[in-house]
Image 1 (cartoon, one colour):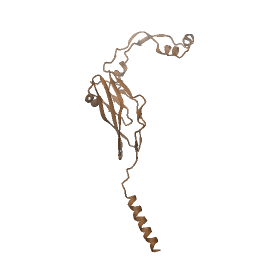
Image 2 (tube, one colour):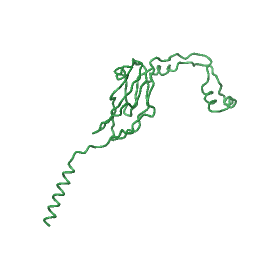
Image 3 (cartoon, helix red, strand yellow):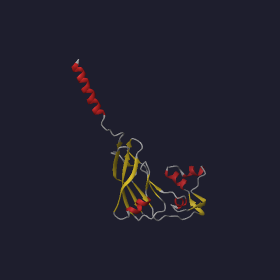
Length: 182
């Protein structure tokens, strides 16, 4: 009986000693982190030609032609190859008018205990100014990059590395996204 009591006390002391170790809460996995589209083009010179009245090509008509629908059938639906009205605006006219920023897709493959925070770890460039990009670049919690429509970033290619962190963990995802300023 005496041996059982001694063994029980030793087992309890061992169990308490193992149970008192600090264990980091949660987890953070970044091994499969990647962007579906890992680059984004940001224009420096915008085409902001305003719309004007005129006769314009109807993109809906030509989209249907490209889908293999016969022109006669499209015309029966009342869709003409041209239309008269406002049109001809530059590619970036409405983006500038509504101040729409350049926005990337979110990052995929990040798993961990919430809340996960993301910050820009490093911006590398050979022919641009990383500090100018850093001044106006925003990265959201899901890894979406945002660059304002109006910026003073020099033309160049910028490669970005991110840091992801949560309670107890911090991991880097290096050279995961490229921003090309044209």
